[in-house]
Length: 259
Image 1 (spheres, rainbow, N blue to C red):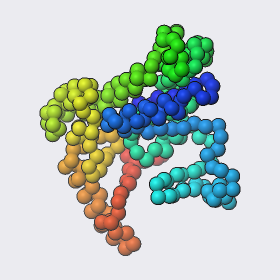
Image 2 (spheres, rainbow, N blue to C red; image 1 turned 90 degrees about the vertical axis):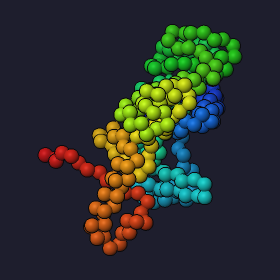
Image 3 (cartoon, rainbow, N blue to C red; image 1 turned 180 degrees about the horizontal axis):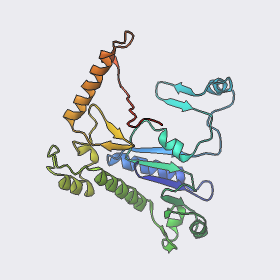
Image 4 (spheres, rainbow, N blue to C red; image 1 turned 45 degrees about the vertical axis):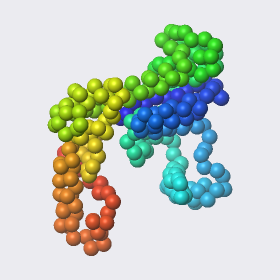
């Protein structure tokens, strides 16, 4: 799981969305792939719209498709963990708007010192505070630092780089342009490289994940795994399936029989 930060506040109109928007732009400029989650007390789907009518008629899930969007709607009680599992991409960091009670590091958007003091008493894992308060007062209250938004960006970037460094497999295969895992780790720490510069972490043709842990594979093992799986599917002689025109094959294998 990549680093996750919850952007929270104790009231409305404290700048959460503005901060996330700014962070997303800055992270993108630095080559960091970011995703976001929006938590709301209100429903997303609008009454009497076609998607709402589909759900009312009994659809388990409705997928809305337009030339520029794809939106999946399910009516269910969901948690932040459900939202995290719903991603179809693998971002470098996830920014969450809301979820004050979640166990992840939190950044508080506050308008005055009393809100920071209240958050220090009520909430856990609030690592920093920012917002209008930074224009008036910068100090440390309890364990919460009050900082400008550029410092929030540095905190997020540092977490991403540490996550990347931890993902370097340490095989010293010599296939990346840095020659060794230690050199790549230094380049990542200095902001000159990303995990995508690791030849064993670059997705080319296939990915192997065991109990949620990705096994690093170079280009040749990935291509071999892809061709072996294609050959297996072809051996099944499925008349209605042309494996050569398929875009993706998903295979799940249970290694232990259920009792």
